[in-house]
Image: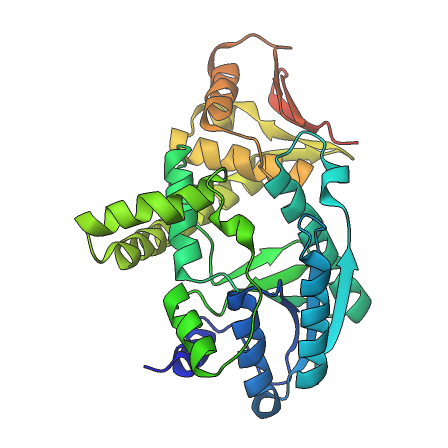
Length: 329
């Protein structure tokens, strides 16, 4: 099957695109995002799409300004509007890793582009190889079922919908298309530096696993899909329980019924707590399995007025409820 057919097949399979859609395309200048840009430009007329390319310049490499110029010229040639922003990521480091800080700033920029253009859909160029690298990273870090999903073809991110139309395609297919069509792209040399975990997985671990199982990419992709299906069911049950147990909301927190939590199976308990934390602080980053175990111990065994102090969150046990409070100012 040709790459163009895989691309359009993915759009239809996961219902990622409708005619007359307006989309922000997150384009770094690397092969994956350049391929995605070309594909959307190719189908633009047929689908009557409104496209805006968004490029975030991290200022982390000397080539960054040249890459920004490359993308602006490419968009000009393709007749697609381009919005770019430049920030010194290192100046924003406040405890997170450089990678996470860059990711946060990039998503803030994409959401700003959504607000400026009144577009609510963002396309990102993550492909199947990115998916399995993410799964392996999370396995190494001890993820649960939620983490084993990797990332999904379509997700909600704050006020936007994020789509990933390359999720059924491998990197080698992207590169082959670019070579066949003599399409230029940028190369990020930091992708070959083994100080980053994702790069070590790509350069060292995956080749070893491929010797044990030549179909490792499809196997891990299937693992992610099955985990996603199972988690989707568990999450729907947990969301119902959360809504049932929620007693009151404040400006920076919420109360959950204590007796209801005590009776809950641990799998549901963990997901209800995750939903609650996500609601009060906007995400569940830095919340680990040991933190959930500590909250469960608080609910089941500790006395009233006991407190669990977690990253950005405080949980207090009261007479008939636990209060989950965001510490983010």
